[in-house]
Length: 252
Ligand SMILES: [Zn+2]
Picture 1 (spheres, rainbow, N blue to C red):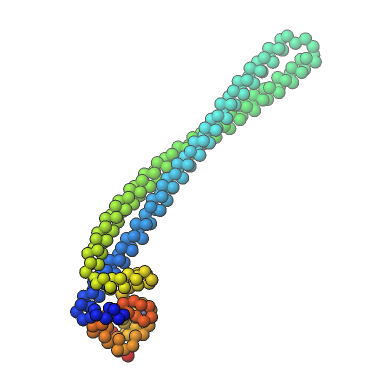
Picture 2 (picture 1 turned 30 degrees about the horizontal axis):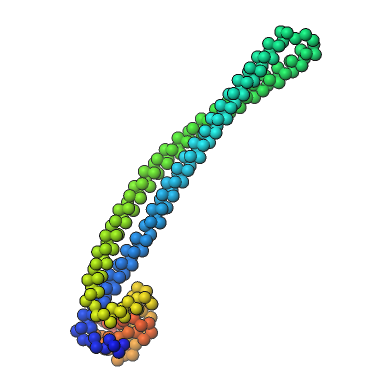
């Protein structure tokens, strides 16, 4: 970059150091932001789990109520049938003909059968009610248990959110403090690369290769980068190159 060629030598090394620091902060910021963004979804999932256990309790309670209502209705039917049977039996005393007697006997038998059917149904229902009551109790207990666990998890995530928010504030302040010392043109360049390439705007040159795109650099440029005297952007990916460290040879 022609317009950045004025930055060289000691100034360049200082600027690269600041940019590397900035890059480190930005990477930490990205991690913190990703973590923060995931939290509301995790909390919503937990709340949904809590609602599901509440729904399970309501379903069990509804089943129990329905069985109790059925029982009340059958008790009513039983009472009605009993009254009817007593009425029929009292008619036996005032009957006049054999035909009437036979017809009455049939009706009494029919009503007696009906009473015993209702009694059987009530017994079945009593067992159902007992079972449904036990199920409802179990569902309530399990809901109370998991509610406790979920509430603790949500509280933990709430604390996590506070911690992350504080960490973000601290990192953002740190970024401002570092960025104010970076040359305006270099900062602009850095941000443009981040925008187009993602996380890394500065990459080390290793064995003469850009580690961002693995393009090989002309050896003369590699030497200059090693000396840290000239500003270089990779011709392949546009990232800012710095010397990758000891033991690597930029020469071909
Ligand atoms: Zn490159």
